[in-house]
Amino acid sequence: MTPCGILLAAGGGSRMGTPKALKFDADGRSWLRRGVSTLRDAGCSPVIVVLGARAADAAALLLPDSTDTLVVESDWQKGMSESLRSGLEAAQNLDAVAAVITLVDLPDLDTTTITRVIGPTVQSDDLRRAVFHGTPGHPVVIGRDHWPALIASLAGDSGANAYLRTHHADHVECSDLSTGRDIDYPQA
Image (tube, rainbow, N blue to C red; front, side):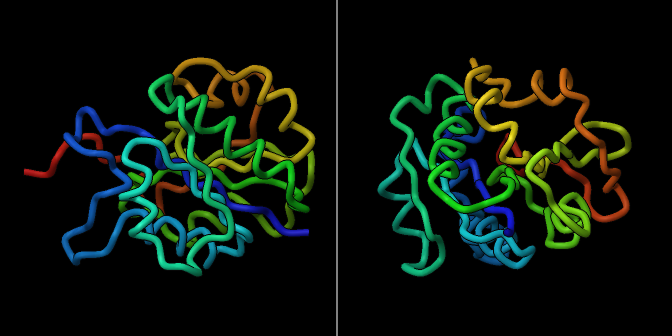
């Protein structure tokens, strides 16, 4: 069994001025499409895209065959936990051993970083997260055995951080591959 991918792209982008799911890089490539293809290229199948703010506009940016599951989170304003919950609930209907979770606003996240965090094998009890110079970031690998307890614990805008700390997620250093930096503000 392979891991599925979950791309969290539901936020309104209040600091950015627009939902990040609608952003494009300097080369004109959609952040949303880039996130989906990076997860797919790393072996995640299917990819679940969680949208919220301006979901119809964001969905229109996806190629018809670019994702297997599209989830629209109506309570996206409540924070990342609602988006993550929706993605994991959709994943429960799949035959995936784990979920590889990442964010739409990571410009230099690449396939190599994701495959390092996934590791040579992925098991249903895995719990891993990328770290960059010791700072936790994305992607995160959450084995299927953790999904029910994680879903029950989610609240607010912190996502899985508390769960990952409490359950001692393995840290996978990735600073030699990418920065792990997310983009929260418009580039000057």
